[in-house]
Amino acid sequence: MRSDSPIQFSIVIPFFNEQENIPPLYMKLTEVMVGIGEPYELVFVDDGSKDNSYKVLSDIYEHDHRVNVVRLRRNFGQAPALKAGFDFARGEVIISMDGDLQHDPDEIPRFLEKMEEGYDIVSGWRVERTDHWLMRQLPSRVANKMMAKLSGVDLHDFGTTFKAYRREVLSEIHLYGELHRFIPALASWAGASVAEVPISNIQRKNGTSNYGISRTVRVLLDLLSVKFLLDYSTKPLQFFGLGGLLCLAAGGGIGLWVFLRKALLDEGLLANHGPLMILGMALVMGGIQFIATGLIGEMLARTYYESQNKPVYTIREVRSRREAMAGRDEPPRTAGAAGW
Image 1 (cartoon, rainbow, N blue to C red):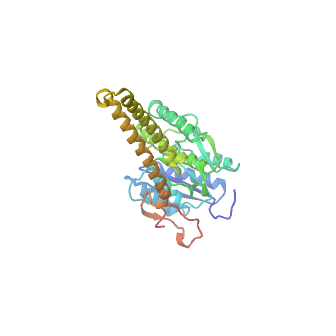
Image 2 (cartoon, rainbow, N blue to C red):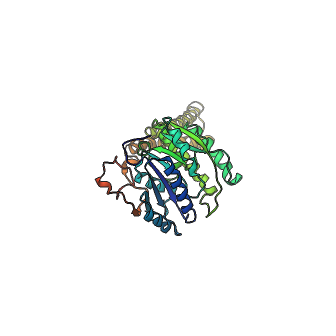
Image 3 (tube, rainbow, N blue to C red):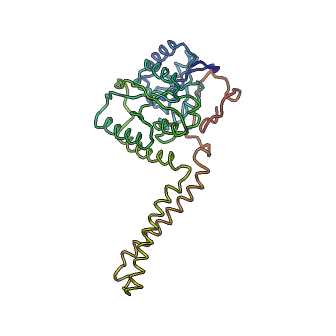
């Protein structure tokens, strides 16, 4: 996997109130990456931590030139924090992990071996889950099956952050909401090849989990958004237009039937068919609105979210020994990279 890039691997890890987990994770990461023997960097993102996480990260930065620390102004969430790290990373292969010690750095070589086979994305698969069955495992299984079915990407575990990517794949992905877990689906739509490797699921030893059942609801809503983006983002009229045509057909059919009853049988419309007439008019109006929404969507698709170049995070501070980005021959950065 050698290349002309001075940095082969970038390890991107977002932290939010993980002061106790940072030192042991850093030590283990260093041991593993030194053993691999390729140039690497560590990109640590402080996602607005309220504890001493940033101080711990700064201390590590002072003693290791391979460490970069990106500090966000507030807690933006995992997807924007990962996006900040991805934008800053310059390795040919970018590996993302959680900062709570539930991902084992010893498994990184397994990801790299899989990427040697030619895959663009390698995703972790927590075969044996150790978290709460009702609150975490059951919702996760349901969500994963729905994601695989709707996205067409045959993965068992979309939810884990432990993934490896080729940088050119990430450069085309825009993250917001909870979309970081849908990167394989979004990249696959663009032609990227995706594989998965089994990983262990280590129980958290320090700190408090930031995940809950409410996140499952948000993930399911984002799943609907991703399905729309994958299938209809460039043709929204086909999505809304079908419903509009069905409503117009149903409303028109009701109207025709009522008209024939009046014309042929001279029945009183309001007295005999008042509710049905109201339903018919509502269906016609709804059909017109659906089609109008589709037409508006067609126009908005030309100025889609990415074209606004609107950042999904803001940076308070960056600590890095890297020379100024403006002086480097780097690929164009995506939304959120402004200011480096």
